Image (cartoon, rainbow, N blue to C red; front, side, top):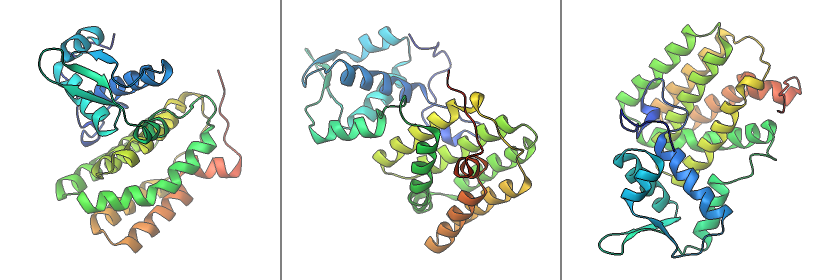
Length: 252
């Protein structure tokens, strides 16, 4: 059972200034994907009708529809209308393996350093894809998040959660589902580790770094994007401390 969905799902949380860590639809898609992979469900296995899934997980119809849409895009399920219809495990071969890579990598063995290295490697592509799609309204929303980050500069964890919201929005602006899924999963892993992590104080330089990143995305010039991403990598407290070996994370 998921948390009550009385207010309806947030289908595009990254466009919300404070955005949820993971949308209900994304969480449901991951839950069903885990069931398919862990239980080795064969192609053609019926997962249920949309109504049955909605009642099982206690979420809104729109949440079910969005979760199924996500899974169809990833090649995990197919939805069939009419009598005898429902949601079925897809026969996708390589598509299914791709979904396992992007959604189902083993979080238990991946270290924070591993996740940061991959995140940093993907960031240039993420920002270039965002630049291709962003509107003036998107730029204004990103700048609003950066303003909130500046106000939260004395609270490291609040600052970093706003930081993740900004990066989720940047990722969501692109139109590459595989890239988006992998990047957001990495961000979720890093976000979940915040309570066990020791940080050095956030500085105004980090705020300026993110302002330059938003400006580069708005400009759209590849050279400016690459320069802004490189600056972000150098000045990111998390990346910097992991590279230097000075960060500590407790395993529970």
